[in-house]
Length: 510
Image (cartoon, rainbow, N blue to C red; front, side):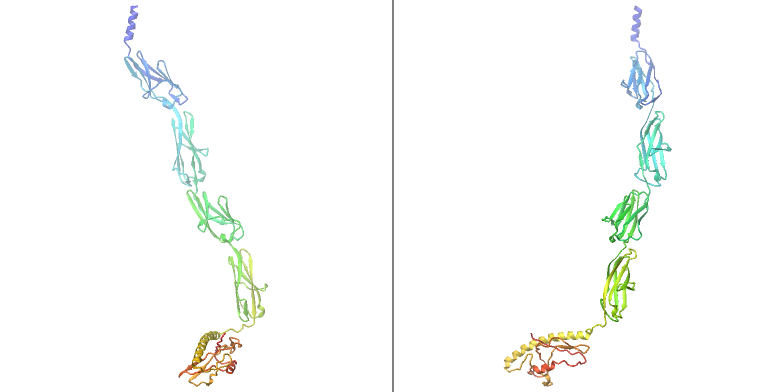
């Protein structure tokens, strides 16, 4: 009994220091989420206690972490990439402590966060340009990559896809797929849309007919090579405003006129564009119409041996051609102007001008009635016109003088109390009895003589005349009287034709 007691005391008092601390794992190749691992900590010494460290953090028990055998065994269930370590085991007792060398676990994971990055990055690419697509992923070991276009596997491999001199058929959705040959897992990136556009070129506007005609249906078609996004129509430099006879269809490709009107003439332009280019084409629309408003201008009355000149006009595009007919039968001219010398009275009648548009094939006529007479009536010559003017002036002057004379004569009669034989319309004085020093003149302006020698009466003879006395006196004033009625009546007789122009002035009191 005494011996046993002594051994116990020695054991309690003298602990063996810690030594030879080592950590071992039961598996070296682990797959994230699929594998579990146990780490064992071995050590020499007595009264040992165990503490596990992941990097510098203490590992404690949890749902995924188990500590068994007094803490000497660490078990991790469904390892993750964050369980790689380094793991250390610290062993201690009352007299010492020792930490093991670090142990790292090889855990394969991924791929994750697979990402596709273009260079350059833009919404649209011009045909013939170069594009580089790069793919990346988080993976251990490094992922392998393959490429897809619109879901179809491409032959290219690796983290970069180069598209050189890209063509239209290479447009589409590009994606890359990362593959981990340890975890046997794959992940595909979000698709990247590559839109390849061809530059707009060769724009044109074509008409459905070479000769548009008013009233017919006409289509203008806007075409171009390249990737067409939009078409914009303009007329005469301004945005086209559709009227009730216009419509656009086939995504603005066709501008239709149903029907075409002459007001639709003008310059039409179509601008075709896409995000990388544009081109414009123009078309001058000449609407052929008519003829309309056919008119004939010229004489309606003409005399023999005179030249007839009639002009025909019409509104027409292109200009109308003209045909002249006389009394609807005989074709006499093929120009807009009809000129001919009239030689027969029978050339009176209806002159018809028929206008024809050689494009529209339409015709329209106008009729002009002409009367032919044998002789032109005598006309007033230049001398005649001058005589009329002079007569008018004399009449006005005589009227003024006559009025003044009557006023003066009455005044003189009252002063002299002499009986002056004054008669209106019944008596007068013949100026033949006056001496050379006193020449008495009077005027009865009723007649004038034209260039043909004929006398023209200005007023009726039935009205009484009052004469104005006009006297040229180089000496003392003399008293004179108006001509007697008999003298006046003798002078009323129309004289024979004389050379020159004779002018008479009649002053009449109303």
